[in-house]
Length: 88
Image (cartoon, rainbow, N blue to C red; front, side, top):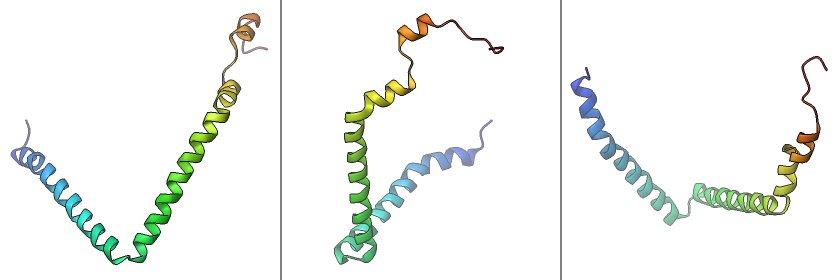
């Protein structure tokens, strides 16, 4: 049987999470307005992340089929080969 405090905790959890996110957001906005060094580092890291993800996406667009081909055996070869046992 569930404890009564567990139900109260679960009901208060969304309000607590939203309050923490609101506090974090307001702190972030204050730092953004004052151009704190942490905000500058955040901008640089965010730019690096976006450029890295863009590079990965472009590379996958060019080389994705080649990489996939390295890991998957074509059906023709699989049909022609006899199954190997652990003795071979």
